[in-house]
Amino acid sequence: MTVLPNSLHARDVAYHFHPYTNARRHERVGPMIIERGAGIHVYDDQGREYIEAMAGLWSVGVGFGEGRLVEAAARQMSRLPYYHTFTHKAHEPSILLAERLVRLSPEGLDHVFFTNSGSEANDTVVKLVWYYNNALGRSAKKTFIARQGGYHGITVAAASLTGLPTNQRGFDLPLPFVRHVTCPHAYRHARAGESEEAFADRLAAELEAVILEEGPETVAAFIGEPLMGAGGVLPPPRTYWEKVQAVCRRHDVLVVADEVITGFGRLGTLFACEHYGIRPDMMVVSKQITSSYQPLAAVLFSDAIYQGLADHSEAIGNFGHGFTGSGHPVATAVALENLAIIEERGLVANAARSGARLQQALAPFAEHPLVGEVRGVGLIAAVEIVADKASRAKFDPPGRVAFHLFERAQAHGLIVRAIQDTVAFCPPMIITQAEVDELVARFALALEETA
Ligand code: PLP
Image 1 (cartoon, protein in one colour):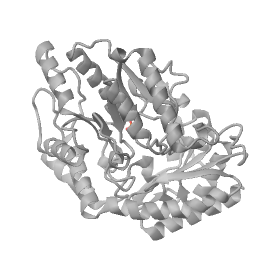
Image 2 (cartoon, protein in one colour; image 1 turned 120 degrees about the vertical axis):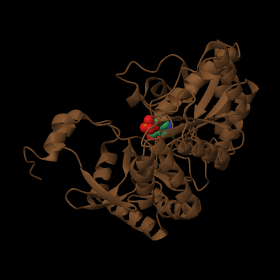
Image 3 (cartoon, protein in one colour; image 1 turned 180 degrees about the vertical axis):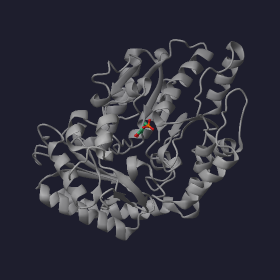
Image 4 (tube, rainbow, N blue to C red; image 1 turned 60 degrees about the vertical axis):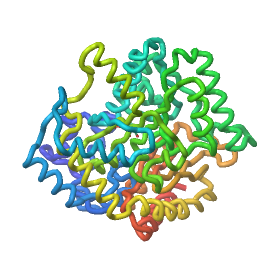
């Protein structure tokens, strides 16, 4: 493609420093400019159509071009485009959404704090937990335990919880309030011959050992994605969550479920907590809450935590935390409409149905010589490729071949995500079974050209 000096491409390279992008490579290859979307498809500025098999960034649940969300935003913009929620101010959409989230969420989550992004929500989790423990006079109880391979965002505290080298190297992170334990991914971390249950036992024992080593009086919370997303779509081994929760309860350690990707139907249940039997003290949601038509995230927490926060702010002054956009009226109005669409169109049940089809259609790739593992639950899945199937050896350097596969997929009109040696799929929840078949057919062509 010829790049004209004053084209959007040239101006993007000149002025726009992109997230998660190698800037030098970007200077050479330039941007892929997406102009519009409809249903599960997006279209670039050359008029090419793609199946968006990642729903953007694991997020556009109701698909692209949903007119009802546009109308909900426009209605709210004309009525009250902005107001804040500091110092007792409120507006209808934020109140209604907080109530709705409490009604929809797992039992025991009774209060909601709004942020703009998942990262801010996880930073908020850290601060709420610290504030709460200060309220209870347990000022030493501040350490968080997270997992290697976990992703909780990129702000300073959230990136410290994240257990991925990319988000820490070069940034002087993680901060020392976090300990990371073994990634709960059997394919890579279980021992030869170890059952999933035995692996889960070992992970729970490791968690308990870390808590005891730190001293339970210093360990505040355990945070995890019910099923890890950005680390490579990693479902935990069977019985993991029940065992980990038992350890946390024994040592008075709060359980925080990060449902930023999994919330609102991705696994075929409204929340992944239902799928795995998790009873969290705190839960973080974002992305599919508005199908990313507006930036919005929320932290839900128990009444016990609320009582501590409320008592403490009564004692020491206003709760000194909040964002200009906390509970933004347009974002919360869009979320209410989005959740109504998910319910009216039965998209959680559709995610279960189309998800079963996706898992079934991807499963045979496990036999392919390049493929080490095929995994997933509902409408989130991954294919991990390996340099050597028998030894499970990774490619050197990691990601090179997966990136080629990603590029071949794009050439066949399929947008996936390459995470090191793993290719991830997380299509919009409106996807039909026929569209799943088309997605998988395009992936098969790309894999053929990579082999
Ligand atoms: N938590 C999880 C599980 C995520 O997957 C993400 C983003 O992908 C985040 C937190 C951070 O969200 P954001 O990118 O909105 O800051």
